[in-house]
Image (tube, rainbow, N blue to C red; front, top):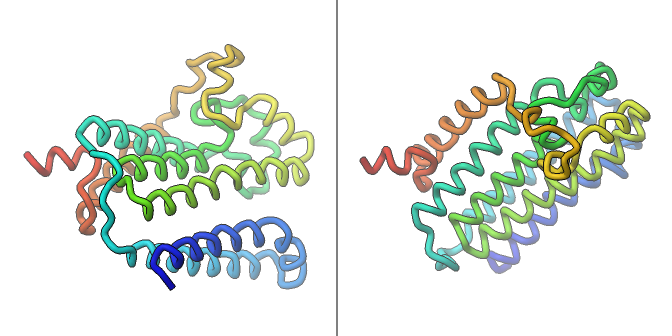
Length: 235
């Protein structure tokens, strides 16, 4: 199989198994084997297919970039990843989209911080991460990988809206009515004040630490230097 064909096949497998196990197969399999056992199987399949995807991506031959990538684009992409990191860290606390016994109670609270930006901060964080990589590595292989990650995150969050509405009923519908799927949509429409979007300390500080650590690790693991380390390292 050609390298690009293998990459596309693993992308389809990665996305397909995620959607199948998250929606049509979840209830029958969880009912048969139990929720805990199902979560173990789900995790194993997710990790295995992701490893296959990464290996296929790493096996792609070198490709010429489709555009020149200068400092300006690197700065913009680095800021995107910083925002993605803040969204991700903020999503870990007080997120009714995460599986938790008190999700319905959490959904009654006023959306603040990252949840005033979007009700799916974790998923948009993944999408922004993918977009940033496509900007600074403009090759067909990277576009394929980034598009796969972004599609899974954004289509998955849309599917999560449907599933949560079914599981949580009015609690999720009330949360959805006070939040937006598209980042900053409520602020741009004048529905919600911009001040509500100021990240809470755990999101802002945690996001900065995550961003610094991840971008440092990017270069330490042998990939291109990223974030501020791209300039510090050259100094």
